[in-house]
Length: 242
Image 1 (tube, rainbow, N blue to C red):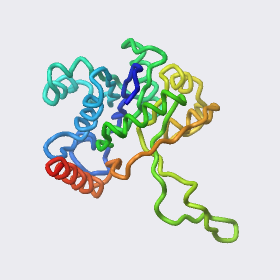
Image 2 (image 1 turned 135 degrees about the vertical axis):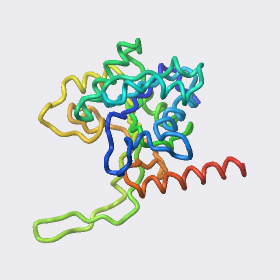
Image 3 (image 1 turned 180 degrees about the vertical axis):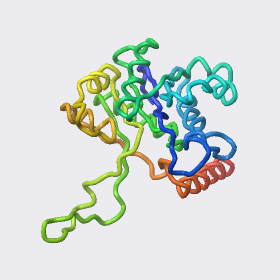
């Protein structure tokens, strides 16, 4: 266990999530009686007592944020949690969150874990792997090996490719605050980036992968919510029997 640097989590929760067909955004749906977003924040708060959390919210959710924090987090935890307003696209939301972290006083060398609000199944070992790699190499992106056989389309049909070369990318994706903020500030505004690593790579950064976990699912559909409930139950049973 190392990681003595300044640490922060930037949790992207700026969507209003309609794919689940629920009456609220997916990050606020209950998972065993507690909102998914609260579970996700818990994981970071529990990892280190000096880690700070910035949550990027849709403007429509910001008004209810103080009551959300008061309901779901202990008084001593609340100073470590803040929120800011996101933008129309994910890239705008992340940039807003990075600016808010700088305004909060986080130093340029701080390690920032950018994470999806609807991935609540990270743990201490997971975060330690990522932060230690980022400290050593400058960045770290979670990923897991592809399990299925892969084929690539060609002009005449398709061909098999070596699946050992490919990974499913997850979050968190961890960077130095100043470096990733520069990447967002200088990004190609006409390009579409699905994650932070792709954006940073487009500006010349070499991206390093660390071992993620297959339980680190992103809850976006009703099936995902069912799977999440099973993962939570499995983790509870594991704690009881350990």
